[in-house]
Picture 1: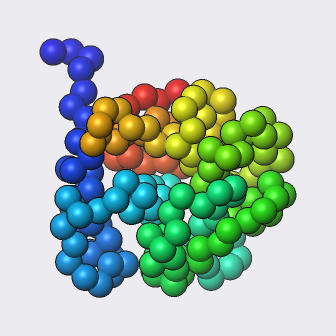
Picture 2: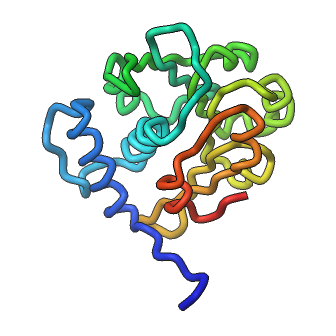
Length: 183
């Protein structure tokens, strides 16, 4: 049927995420996809999103992944700190102000900050920062990638390609093909 896309189930995406983590050395133990929490899968998604995005050149040796607002990941994200990513070393940080987001490569915006989303996006306008959130409607408001729970045990994501291009980020066509919606 034309126009219909097959979306990966949560379990299938978890298997893909675990495979990518093990392949990259970011996960040292073999894990069962069924044993992963939703937060672990979302943390893996953040790591893997970064693999499919190209940033303008920056003169630093680390790739900075930040969480703004209440942290839904905890140890799941901390386990990625120091791992290789795009010929750099991943550094995980928690930030407390929107202006600190300018120093990040990837910025996860927690739902606790959804009311301040317009001002955050104004601060980051034209900055090469990949913004990600799991807040409903975030991509339509200007967040570049919105992680969505499609149904129970199914995850997907939406991409705001216009916002990414405005910030001089190039999102791989491979990632765009997996997106539920591309704005």
